[in-house]
Length: 82
Image 1 (cartoon, rainbow, N blue to C red):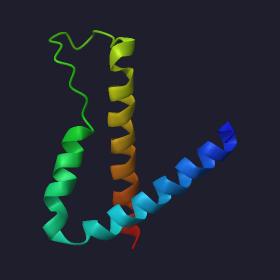
Image 2 (cartoon, one colour; image 1 turned 90 degrees about the vertical axis):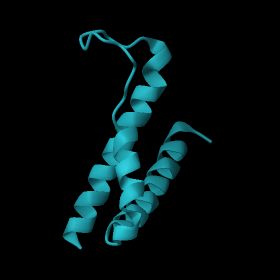
Image 3 (cartoon, helix red, strand yellow; image 1 turned 30 degrees about the vertical axis):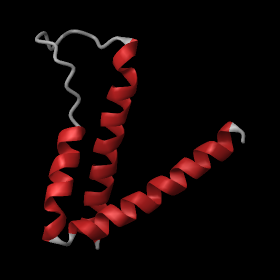
């Protein structure tokens, strides 16, 4: 699998996930799921100095938190448009 194929597959998974999340947002029974995901979207490295640049050891966690935030934003936008 080349890079373009991998990217296309990831984008397809992302679209499906956003659609599922958007439809779930209409049901208040799922509010806790989205509250928990919102907490996961905030990266906490335990550092007291907010100016400290994260090391490579935290890069994957930072990217994961960022992607969760992007998924939530996209799902909220899609749910609002429906």
